[in-house]
Every structure is written in structure tokens, then in C-alpha cells.
Length: 387
Image 1 (cartoon, rainbow, N blue to C red):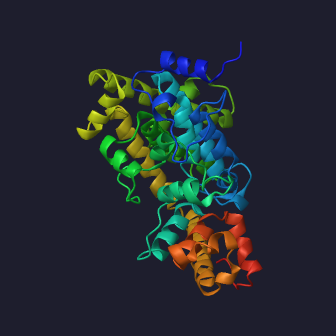
Image 2 (image 1 turned 90 degrees about the horizontal axis):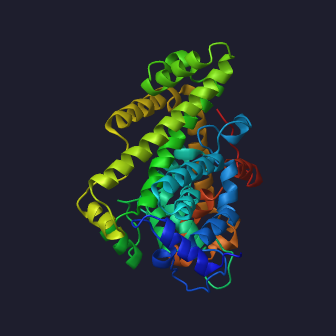
Image 3 (image 1 turned 90 degrees about the vertical axis):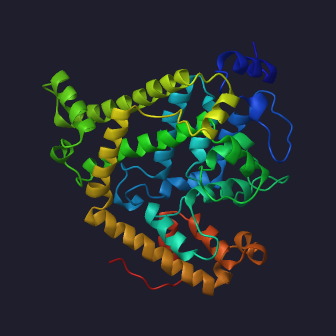
């Protein structure tokens, strides 16, 4: 039996929780399109995101280590895929819309600049007084304006539910009806799941990359409760296996424990506050009730883990050196393109009259990969040497 649109919509109604975002209620777009015969709106959003240029470029954008450090470290693309995987798992177990959570996860870092958070800091500094820069706002800009794949509309024309999920609460977004609704109703549960999945993904996989690079040591990590508990459990269960496999088992144990805690704690909150509908979700937001949450012990342990990573990995001398070099490259490129707009592609430059040269230069650089930014220095004949 072929499952056409009507059957797929019926299945959503039957299988999703009453407080989940459903295609029939939330799958509308700014530019009306004919619905697909066998793909529901959020699945189409996922496909559009995966096929866009900004998504492909994530492979050569920094997570913690620049691409040239090695082949086995996370980059912005692998991080995104891990966030999508966690989001889908949590959404499915809670009866939420898996496709929507996954779509938001796949798009959440599309606006990230080259060289990770150092690149974002550089662009934020350079754009001060000219509209600013923040990668979540840039992600929304990418899918609404910068991607050019369709003849009938700018951007990807994603559903409002996906766009609102990309918008981080509290961010200063352009005035629009969608932003008004977002501020009144708050983020969907699917969007909140993605925020937590992002935190879970980077907190767990950055440990693995730090150990792989030998910027962290297992002995140091014994001061972190999450690590110590899972490491000792793995050693007790497998007393004779090699240390490398003990570490791999510990990574998996940590990820599984955090995800499981998020699921059970969120489920308990939904039951406690008797969440039975989307309206209940919106009312909880208005009353500042957190529905998606860790347990108090896990929240404390996550803070401990993130504090450890900040001190021992993100502020490691060599990581800081890579970050400083990335910022310097962006400063140099930004100054060059402000003075030489003829070097900017026409697809960006055509918006200069409406949005100003600073925004055009910012869009161009934010879309670059680490590799392309470094190559662009040579292509433009800019003298610069790493220090």
C-alpha cells in the first residue's frame, strides 16, 4: 500500500502526542506552494536544508579544531548530524514531531562563521554599529534570503514552524508577524529539544576530541562526576579490554545517560504540569515554566562538565592560538573587502544599496569555510602569515 499525503497526515494525528507540532497545523509557508503527494512539510524542510549550499559548507567549518588538524575530529557538519540524531531520538520517545526537530537541528548552525566561535566573535565586533552579527540570526538569514535555489521565492521557503525553531528565544530578530507569534507563544517543544540536544552533543563529543588530540587526559577527567561514574562502570564491566575501548565505552555511556535523563525529566515535567495540548505549551511559556529540562543532579553535573571543558579545552593554549589566528584572518578579509568590493561576488554585492556594504561583506565572510577563507588570502594577494 502506498502511503500518500492523506494517510501520512492521519498517521501523524494518531501517533503524535496532542502537544506535538503537526503538519496540518504548522506546515504552512510564507510563499504558498503545492503540497507534495508523499512528503509532509517538515520532511521537505529537511530535504531542502540538506541540499542547500550552506549545509555542504559545514564540513569545512570549525567545531573546536580547524579542518587541517586531522580527519577524525568533529567539524560543524558532523556536530550538526549528531545534534539531529539526538533530537530525533528524544522527539520520538516523547511523541513529538521527529521531522520538525530534525529539520531545526540540521539548520541550527547554517549561519556559523568560519573558525567557530572565534569567527563569530570577530564578526560581531566588526559589525558593531552596523546591525551586529550572531550565528543564530545568520542561520535564519541564510534560509530566508541568502540561499538561491528556487525561481519562485528567495531562500528555502521553509515552514513557519521550522523558521521559528531556528530563532533562539530572546534574540533581537527583525520585526515580522512570525517574530510576534514567537514572542507570544514561545518555542515549540521540538525546538526546545534541539537546544538541549546541541548542548548534549558538544559537551560529550568535545571530550572525545580533546582526548584524541591529547589536550585532555583521562586522569584530569576523573574530577568530573559524569566521566568518573561512566569510566569506572566501564572498567568494572570490561576489566581486561584495552584502554582505548574503555574510553569509547565511557563516551557512549555519558551520551546515553544525559539523553536518558533529558527524556525522563521532560516526560515528568509534562505530566506534572498536565500538558495536553499546544495551548498548554504556550501557556507554560507565558508562565515561565520550563518543560524541557534535565533533572537537578544532571543539570549540576552538566555545568561541572562544561566548566571543565572551558578551562581545560576551549582555553587551551593551542586552541586559543588557532582561534586568534582565525579571528585575525577574518579581520584582514573584512577590511580588504570593504576597500575592494569588486572582489565580492555579484550575488552578494547586488544587495549593497539596500543593506549596506558592511552587511554584504559580513554575509560573504560568514558563508566561507575555514579552508576557503585561508585560500582567499592568497587569491586576493593579501600578505599574512600564521603566528
